[in-house]
Image 1: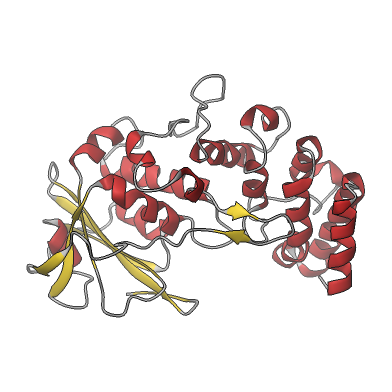
Image 2 (image 1 turned 180 degrees about the vertical axis):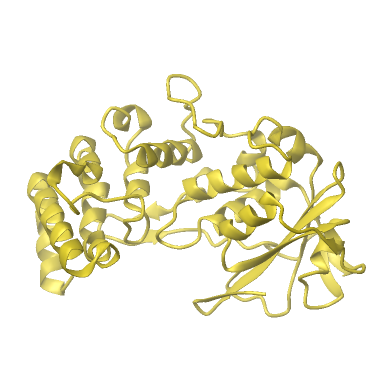
Length: 322
């Protein structure tokens, strides 16, 4: 949007002329989609959607996702500005306020899990998650970060703040490690595919062997600075890596991590995740080229003898995985 149009829209928001802004959003999005396609139409209206999702009363803001405005007029889970519009909305109101207002099932689910990450317990009185992901945070999900760091902090007129978590976050507790020979690759496992899909800018491998043997498949050197961390210390960076990018939110990261852990148990349900987390050994290491955002992690399951490694980095705004 050009500058004077942005100023006009912000003035309307300051004056709380929300029905007018919603009408402008729907009209602009529908026209943009019709003329330039879904992705471009959604991108053009993202800043206006942000203003509405952030500042409007929930009864009106929730209508961003209501298709009653006609073809192409409603936001989807992919619509975003600094972050997904549904996540902006979820940071502003409780689930109790939003539950009666949200129709689309995918939006409802992501808003639910955002509220859970913000500390709202929904295990009573809310519809169960379709994959069985708990609607309250487990103890290992609470460790390793402050509540305000779990979801982006959005700004009224646009933009967001988010803590930059890297894995490993530092060298404290780590030391020189000589990696063993790389473990034997294990192919075609669902957990490996889910790990690769969750963090597309990184490379994922599964081996038969230890965490360091999995790391040896991806590390650039046989001698690294590394060590083991509890899963609770690993989880925040893994979740953020799985929700990287303005089109994805923390709820998608949480769901992706739970699906990954369920697949690592060999089951499709999440019932065995707690047992798995209690026995996982998490090896992490540094790479000499680490700069902005990176993750180097091996998840070792002693019960199965399998270990999954994930390694990748973002350099100067360009995503690259080895």
